[in-house]
Image (cartoon, helix red, strand yellow):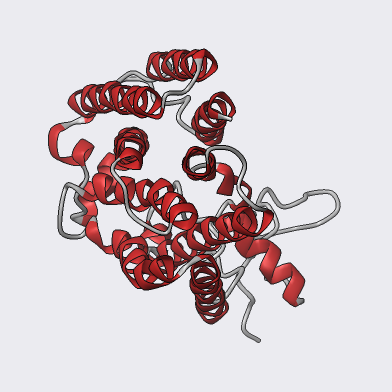
Length: 308
């Protein structure tokens, strides 16, 4: 009789010797469970991230609070656009995420949801975005395909250019422009200051986040500023971008003729950005995480509260 090989202690499990390995998460079986997993993967609760800047542009364009119709469809467009872009980014990066220790537990590389389910979500979110644009006015509808092209194109830019951070910034920066056009039905110069501010603000914190993956980016041949110039110079570049973004926000507040409350909010935003950069050093990125992301979301909310 062939003797069975002894089982490794690492694979042995009993009530007296429990396994040291955590249980492997199982894919949810219901549609609601899969949808909840996907929404967690794209951090749906962080839809508030760029939305306040869009709402700030909307309020200024309307000279006050717009109609409930406009407000509803602007919010729907922003949430749908972000959901579509984030899901597409996770889908496009699923193989890279699987090779990155920091991201290998995300739902797609971990097998918790399927690529086909994610594709369906992207299509539905994109359709909702186009519908919202059409409900606002003809110019929004006409420009919606260009917005989709920018939102989805970002996911591929890091394979070709170190300027991918600015493409992501542009993807968020078009939100104030779109909200302005939603109210006025035409393009004007004033929201450009706000759009540029959002672009530079986004590019700055994206550079900070990219510092977490600098070794992976270099190994995979991905283009990011930290991978190209190093963490220290990249953090300095992010600080300069945030300084210029504050100037752009100030120009928007000035040209819009907003009151002292908006200036007070801008002072708080500037202070938050200052402390944000005090939290990171080239030799210590331990504070760059979910809380850091929420910190940036607070910046947009404070600015919006000052504007309204």
